[in-house]
Image (cartoon, rainbow, N blue to C red):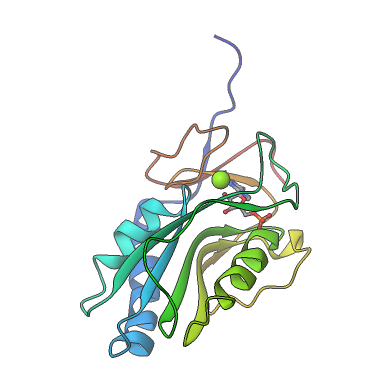
Amino acid sequence: MGLKPKPQVLFGRKEIEATVSRLAAEIRSDYHDKHPVLVGILKGAFVFLADLIRLLDFPLEVEFIRLSSYGKGKESSGKIRVVQGLDSEVKGRHVLIIEDIVDSGLTTTFLLDYLLQKKPASIRVCSLTSKPSRRKSPVTISYLGFTVPDKFLVGYGLDSGEEFRNLPDICFIGGDK
Ligand code: IMP
Ligand code: MG
């Protein structure tokens, strides 16, 4: 066993629960009569999306898309491609992208361009977290959970090399900043 970084809690589960409830209320007020398509970005957004949709008591659909952006490293390569696309049409639909984290913004910018080509009625971004200090491409996040410092986050769906997605809190690994 080598020395593994021990994740430190940044936002605990109670705080996450309150934040997801707040986002659900905001989304409800804008989308309750729009039958939106929520597009979750695999894999990181699956825990957030699962909690969020159970607080949305109106008709909606869920789709997933899988993009490759990071390869095996922690830095975005900037070369993004669709690994697994959508199963249903988004033409004419109100689309809400559900992200785990907007870091450089390159992934979200790519996805917005990709989905806009499919002519949705509207498109917006909901992200659990955002690291504005890392932005390379500006992104408007209409529904944002937490603004986070420049630390590497894990837990609540977020991973480091596929590890730690199962932690119930949002944690960080690496040194303090
Ligand atoms: P971006 O293209 O740099 O904005 O990165 C977006 C993707 O990188 C996210 O959807 C995550 O999957 C991953 N990512 C960025 N920062 C972190 C982090 O701190 N922890 C875990 N994954 C991250
Ligand atoms: Mg990831």
